[in-house]
Length: 213
Image (tube, rainbow, N blue to C red; front, side, top):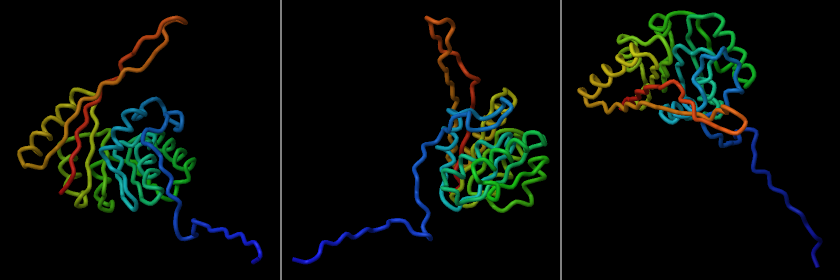
């Protein structure tokens, strides 16, 4: 009889990154933040609209702690680049800390300044998320800057910002560009006593998303 042989096959290669499935909506505790951040459930819905894919470029405008941009790049398996803009230095420092924690410090560029002024020097994006600093001109400029097939997603929590989304939705719809408008209400469990649990409503978020065809 032939000698007994054992054959081992490796499915990994130094040139092929291992693909790991990670569902959208990382826990908020994964991030350093000051309380004002796109929370887990809303972030998951934003990811569904943004549709991350490898080698994508994302703009995160009004980025705060950078949770949207960071989770987007992680869902791209780290293959992509992010540009975060915020007026406040303190928020950008938190975003920098979070990027470093997830090993994305070289993939993310953080800019302190105004959205409209800052985006002029950025490479064309495949995805844009606007979480702060909404205005009509910014919405128009962002849509024009998108690569074909790219997606623009905007969240509003104030009445003033919501009005801007309603106006933009009407304009995009009139141009037959198929925008998607949602009002999202989420209530989370809260213990009001050791024996009783209530559902506490979170702040309502209006989402407008549009893909550039």
